[in-house]
Image (cartoon, rainbow, N blue to C red):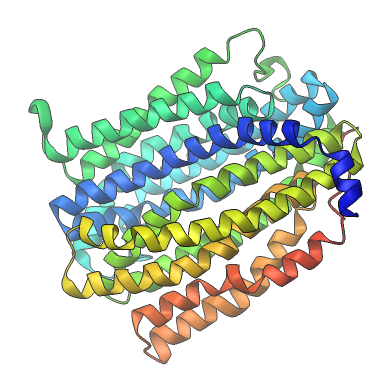
Length: 454
C-alpha cells in the first residue's frame, strides 16, 4: 500500500482519537495489574529478600494459568471485535458463554493444584527450602483467587470489545488499588491486623479478586452491556464453536510457548542462586510496568483492526495495521530510554545484597535493548496480526526463537558452560529482538487482512 493511499484511508484525527480512547484505559488497567506485583516486591522487599523472592517465584503459577485464560479471552476478543463491528450482539453473547466454559475449567484445575500440591509446584522454580516453604504458604491462600480470575477476565474482555472499556478499566483499577492497600495492611500488620508477610500478600490478592468479580457482575447488569446467555450456556452454535476453537488453539499454543518459556527463564535464574533470583524478580516487575503502554496499544490495535475488518472495510483495516506497526517502533525506543532512566532509582529502592544489586544493574541495561523487540512484537503480532485472525504465526515464531534458540542457550549457559547470571539473562532476552525481521516479513504478506464473521 502506498503512503498516499494510506493517508486517504486514514482520518488521522479519528484514528488517534480511537487509539487513545482504547489504548489509554487498557494501558492503565495493565499498569494497575503490574502495580500489584510491584507492590508485593516493594513491600516484601522491606521485610526480607527471601519473602520477596519466594512470592515472585510462586506467582509464576498464576502466570502459567493466565496463558490458558488469555488464549480463550483473546480468541473471544478477536471474534468479538469483528462481530461488534458488524453489530451482532447475539453472537457476542454466545462467545461470552464459550469463554466462560473454557476459563472455568482452567481455573478449577489450577486452584486444585495450588491447594493439593503447592510444595511440588515450588520445587519447579527453586531449590532453596526456605523459598519453597514461603512460596507454598502463599499458594495455599492465593489459590482461591485463581478460582475467580477466569470468570472476571471473561467479563472484562467482553466489556473491552463492546465499547465499555472505561468501566472495565475502572473495575480493574479499583480492585488493584484495594489489593495494594490490603497488601500493606496484611504484610506489615497495620491497624491491628496480623503481620502475615508473604501470606498477607496472598490474602490481599484473594479479597481483591472477590470484589472485582462482584463489580463485574453488578456493572454488567446494565441494559447496554453484553452478558452470558445462560439459557444457551450448554447449546453453542456449531460453526461459532469451530471458529472459536480455530482461533483459540493457535493462541493457546503461542501463549503456552511464551508463558512456559518465560517461566523456564525464571526457573533457570532461580537455580543460579538467591542473589540472581532476587535481581531477576525486581527486573521482571520493572519490565511488566514499562510494557504497559505497548500492551495497551497492542490490545487497541487488535480491536481497531478487527472492527474495520469485521465491518467489511478491509483496505482501511490494512491501513490501520500499517500505521500501528510504525507506532510500535516509537513506543519501543521510548521504552528503552525509560528503562535506562529509572535504573539508578530501582537499584536503590529495594533491600538487596551488593552482589544482587550488581546483577540488577546489568539486567536493566540488557532489558533496555529487549524492550524494542518486545514493543514491536506485542503491537504487530498480538495486535494487528491477531486482529485479522493470523494467530498461527505467533506460535511458530515462539517455537523457533524462544524454544530452539533462547532457552537452549540459557540452559547450556547456566548448567553446562557455567556462565555468569548476566550472560544467562541476556540469553533469555534474545528471542524478542531476534525475530523482528521475521515479524516484518510476515506482516507485509497481509494474510491478516480478512473478515472472520459469518
